[in-house]
Image (spheres, one colour):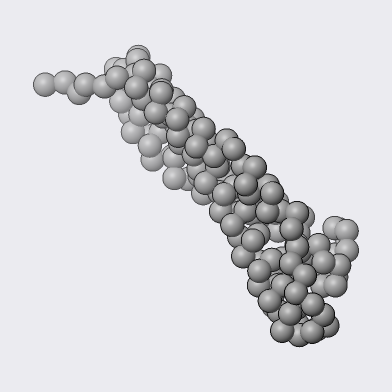
Amino acid sequence: MGTKFDVEAIKKSAGTIGALMNDMSAFEALEGHWPNAGKFMLAVWLERLVDDRRNAIVAHAEHLKLAFEKMEEKLNSIANDFENADGDNADKISSSMSELEGDVIGAVNSFDTTTESDQHNYTHDDEATSPHANDPHDSDGYNDNLNDQVTT
């Protein structure tokens, strides 16, 4: 008894999955909106909280996009391996599935490291490598460390 598969269906599924987050316009539209609740302690706290959640939504969308792109790559690789399946390719197919999780985690970690390096949400930028580094009053919404005390 052999395993049945449809290479074209796998490739079509890969393309569908890979395209799920192609339209990022809703998330890109969120990036440019900074809350302005006022200049008293509660308002500043609320601004920071809203800003942090907005950034998290955008980052989650980017994470999904990366995951779906990696899934598309692996599914296409698997489909190609199925087309030429023999004993060695069966091992490659199994290896591709095992590598998928690591590839997604690696891509997400790389994205997060680059984002943190640019924005300094959770780390101090002693070298002031980004514009307005460590300035909680610049209202850019990206380098305000949420661990810092709220001031007005």
